[in-house]
Image (cartoon, rainbow, N blue to C red; front, side):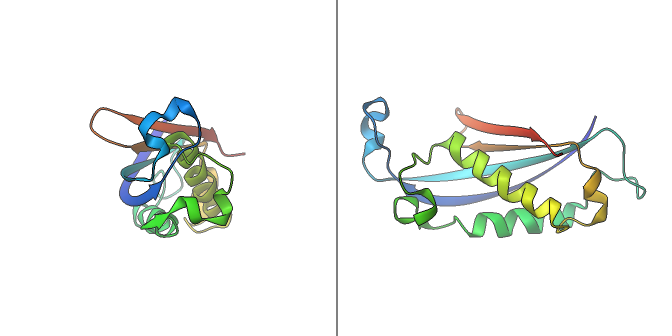
Length: 133
């Protein structure tokens, strides 16, 4: 399996509901480093997994919708704990929607899978991975 990864970051504020979150129940900030890995079994006709420039542009645009926001105030997240894992799936969904819409070019239609990893720090991260069908 071939893969290409791109990276960016974003900053948010949020709080969590539930005793399991301890002090994170209070409003706090997070800066995430985001890695998106694109995978495919065979290279496209140009000999690439995906156009890296387009992948960077799509990731930047995806994260811009989250960057510098208090997610507690975002209607699309009402009633949700915006955990690292939850946000990884949210970004995955938005990236794969962009792939299906052609934002990464026609060669990206041959992608098999995408993995989104959010790094909270040098010692903790979460991810979501799924197939493109």
